[in-house]
Length: 158
Image 1 (cartoon, rainbow, N blue to C red):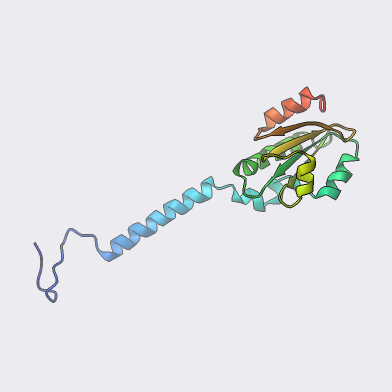
Image 2: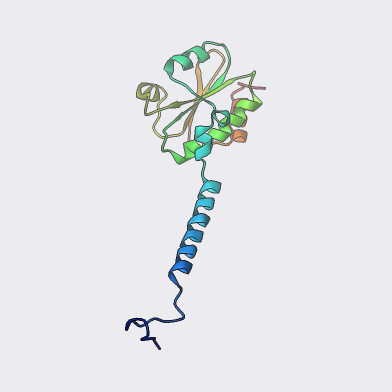
């Protein structure tokens, strides 16, 4: 049952030792850490090569005046769907570099622009025609195929 030879305290031989418990705990932490790294999108936020340009109102105005159609995402930093939309926007930009501009804008940082484009939820995607007019405003996540389809439907790209 127990052993009284160690200063009167009872110990059980089938209990894990302190070092085994510590190793098991560290192993669990490593598994959780690896899972977090593999499932996290936080690296995309930090790497500009994996993201489209984050612009302000002046830069957007300049882009609109260039005579090309474009796509603007209005987002907030804490929006999970906005984070998921980022790589899709980058794919859209890469596939259409010479045909249109693709940018994003923080709706919290620029509330006047958010109001201008009638943002009621994020992400909001604004499609511009070549003359700079708003062709359509869509709310919610869209993958690159859906955005490309919308651009073709609006006759903004061939």
